[in-house]
Amino acid sequence: MEYADHRIVAIQEAIDEAIESANDDTKSSSGDKHETGRAMAQLEQEKGSKQLSEALEFKSVLKKINPEQKSDKILLGSLVYTNKGAFYIAVAAGKIMIEGQTFFAISSVSPIALKLIGLSKNDKLIFNGNNYKIEEIV
Image (cartoon, rainbow, N blue to C red; front, side, top):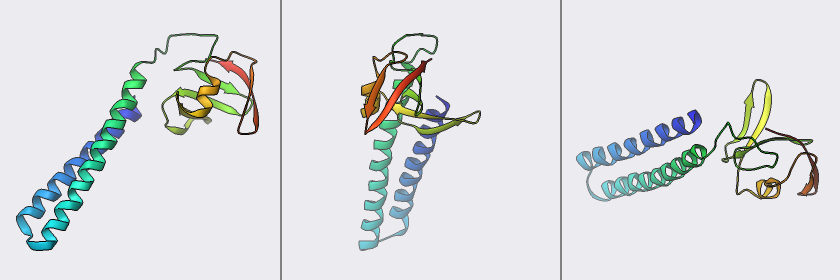
């Protein structure tokens, strides 16, 4: 959640900066340069709005996870240890280091997560030519 909150704040600051830039450009520019500057600022605002929407969705998914929930099967919120690495089935946040251990935070709709969801300890799967064995589900 902290990661999501930081991301949301950073995106909002970028949007605010683009708005301020557009307003400053309106006050100090004229002609084609003015129009180009405003168009660039508008594109930055649109890009920021899309990123903000994605970040809010990211946070929404995280809120759905109950860290107290235990399951013998892999589901949203599971921490899955395999012979090829550890995966956190939640949101696509990439490689995360916690206390010296590497985890891969992946979206529940990513191709590998779709293959993992529903499996249990000791189950096996093949993904991209690699053989995975589920060693533990937390």
